[in-house]
Length: 419
Image (cartoon, rainbow, N blue to C red; front, side, top):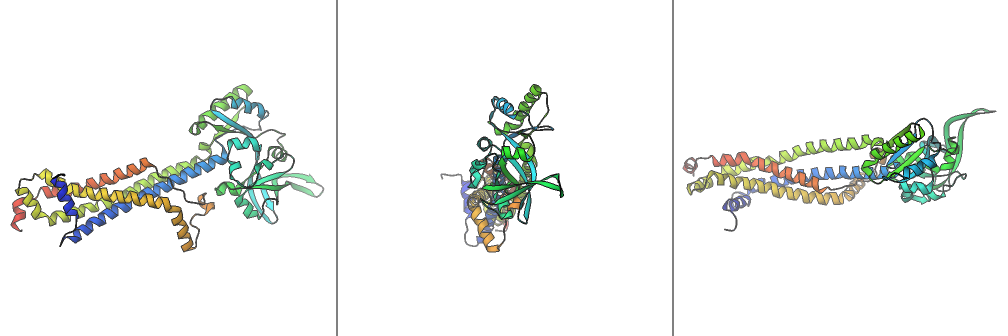
């Protein structure tokens, strides 16, 4: 016999035979239960991984890796500071910006926005604004021409497109013969970008650096420098080190921020949710795995005569344990493989599945203003899949212990008396 007789007997007990189809059906149900639990856990974690990755990429495309700003006033000589920052070995690009808050108005429609004044050429080096501009071109932002690039959601809300007019109203006023009037300036829309995040597509606009400096009265000074670093996960240390160097040389204080500080709440909440979902759905796997206990107990009760005969022929209790432990392990192994295969298929087609559900139900399941993203990305991580597979197999093996030892403890003579 090419394989151990214990495994051969275990495989025979899994196959349906006359009068024993119910036990085989219960075994199949146990496999399916484990498979579904494994698939659900893998799919949920892959969606959360995809959401985290996509959110990180889209955030970094708009906020830059790190930012150094004036503590209580704009940067006096941002050009010299930019050259000094580029001298740092871990900084690959730096771009100045002027930032402030305003109200965007078009006709009777309005919305609060963050106005960011940029140099288009330098901004391309620290953000992805050039790549995500769907209409027009950010290079059209030239000083003195009062042109603006807005997000797609804002364009839809204000009902404007390229060539339209948007008035920016500031929370400042000046005295006129008619009384106090808010400061405002009309801009021509020369581009529409789509970051894929409602927060930016609805609440961020770009103008030229010079126009923003005039609009917010900075006198040509920059609010701060946006930095692109070589090591994304080392951005906080690089920004802190650069700001401390500026502080020593200029005897001034600077405000330092980076993508991990600005959006730490998002990523912490995602990590917390992933941990909680892993624990909760692991309990579902545990429930499915422990269905093996009832399956094996039924098999043990049905096979009492077989166990007694095997023991009479000299089979050791350890071999009896191996027979039923092998049967339970096979159920767990096959169920885990089915779950992984199902998870791979669902993760691959999840976008189409969600689109189909939305068309059937007639509702938007992924509203961009609620979930930040308008689609449902997935990202399978092999290490997590391996962890889940090992967890499912471990629980399946654990579930076989009590029925297996119960079968080994049965007295052969007592069992044969009723056969």
